[in-house]
Image (cartoon, rainbow, N blue to C red; front, side):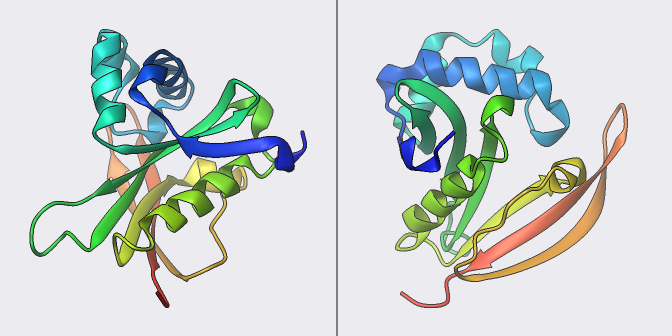
Length: 167
């Protein structure tokens, strides 16, 4: 796969079915990496996914018309938190991994956030980090970790933050 053939762009509400497909795939294949579950989202109608796309910043990585990966930026609300963004819902399909797609998605989220927030926070499941999780090279990154117990297993999550170093 040639990374130059990958287009990163914001998903529109008219792409709800593509978004639904990859989102459900991500929840089914890597449930430990997400705050939601396949069971909770698989019963949602297409209109729910369309609403989500029209009210948030969800980016998609495309090769021709095929959606290879997604990532979203959530800007927190409130006077004391509006300077913070969260990189959430990131997933790259297995056949597109290790080709730079994830890096391009993260870089696009950072570029999108640059004039909107001062801090981007994200969590990476430790298993994902072992698979070669990426961190953008521009800006200042810091990491820490903590254990997050769940009903089935305890997963260790790496917490990362990016701070804008210049406007």
